Each structure stands twice: as C-alpha cells, then as structure tokens.
Image (cartoon, rainbow, N blue to C red; front, side, top):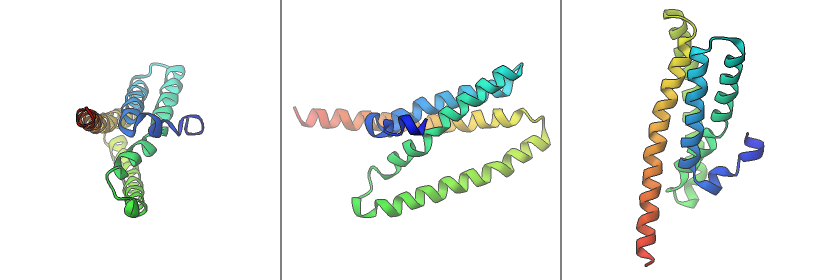
Length: 140
C-alpha cells in the first residue's frame, strides 16, 4: 500500500486519507473479531493491513501542517516517538485483554481504538474543510 499510495496524503490531505484508512481498518478488525472461518479472518487481516499502512503518514502530515518549516524535523521526531510509544503500549494491553477474556476480543479492542482514531481524523477533516472554506471566501 505504501509503495503505490504513499503520495495520497500529499495529494488528498492527511485527514481525508486517514478517514478512509481507519474506516477500512475498523472493518478489518471487526471482521477479525467476528470471523466465522479462516477465509474471512484472512480477508479481515488484509483489510486491517491495508488500512493501517497509510495511517502513519496521514497523521504525520496532520501533525506537522501548522508547524513552521524550521521546526518540522523536531515535530516529526516527536510524532514518531509518540507513535512508537503507542504501538509499544498496545502489545501489553492486548495481552491483558487476551488474558482476561477470549482471544478474539483483542480485535474488538483494535476496532474500538481505530474508531477513536477515526473520530479524531473526522474532526481534523472538518477543520481542513473549514480552513479551505475560509480561504475560498477570502479570495472572493
């Protein structure tokens, strides 16, 4: 996905791509959670991977868009560190979920986490739309 579509956050905007990718990821995680057979579980895994692939660059674009050019390297490093921290904390939390309830609930947890990300992306998309509308009105 990143090989062929990595330019999409630049072309369509980070928030728009994040909304699309997180929607796909929510569907994939939900399918994994409820998969009645191996074929659907594999399809859920493919959807999850496709959705996850562009989330990092999409939110990265959002994270640095309002940062002055001279500080974007530092901002990207902070974004990268917190993304890694989030990924690192997810494994132990998923282990606690798996140990406390059935294994498939890890995917429900993943779907819920992706839903939270989707809400954030939708809020950012609305901000982008408002900024475009304000800029359009200024240029009239």
